Length: 305
DNA sequence: TAGGCCATCTGGTCCT
DNA sequence: AGGACCAGATGGCCTA
Image 1 (cartoon, protein in one colour):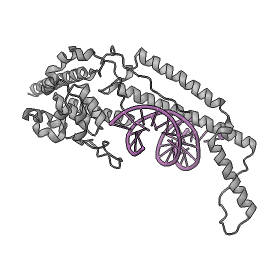
Image 2 (tube, protein in one colour):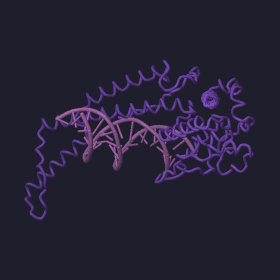
Image 3 (cartoon, chains in turn cyan, blue, orange):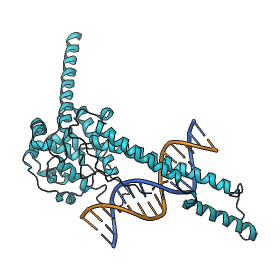
Image 4 (cartoon, chains in turn cyan, blue, yellow):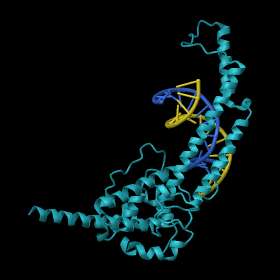
């Protein structure tokens, strides 16, 4: 049974940036989950009603049993006897129990995978780029989430405001072409401007600001992945993105944050940019933290004197 | 049409 | 014994 999830899972535009993981399920999301849960119950019911005679694996199992029987009947000395406990004869009752057990296991496995997919869907909604039309694949969602976490923790660690370029570079490390384009489109950026290979074209002040982001300790080489675009940063693939107005892209990130949030694109149907606001808050907190540490340190110094 | 992505089934292994 | 987890196989759908 194949179930298609073609329905658009759209993040409501009203969802604020403050709805972070624990509260990230809006009423809309809850409704979606309820709907899915109902679908799954139907699915499970169908599995229960399914004719056990139709289970493919059982046919194979029956074939195995036949083989065993043949072996016994032949009594061929040339073939080594199978060691270990002898297989019990598959009676009709045993067969029936096996079928039921197998169907229950299948239903459990389906539910387990659905749970995993729900978690991934929640993750999609909290990573920077959430598009109505272009849903991130599972693997890309995980990669983007990993980059995002790293980028945010780097901001907290350094207490410095990164520029947009280096932030997006960090986000796009190891992502595929479509995802990189999505991130670029999401930020209304020209992907050319943050390509690692072209970093020498970035103004000097940008490169300085990017320093802490350049060395991505968790960047991976994705060994063993079959083919590009996975695991590569081949820049050629990024050029397919449609041209935008790139004027603000080279401006320092935090100078434009608030104005960007009130720009028309903020409310458009295209991917939202809530993380810009989040970034603003995080960096503000980091600055306050830094100031507080400096203040306390100074005070302790005075006390010691 | 090939390749990517996905859902599902399945058998194996480990744990309770 | 039964459930959770995992990886391989398979087939369907979609897109470049």
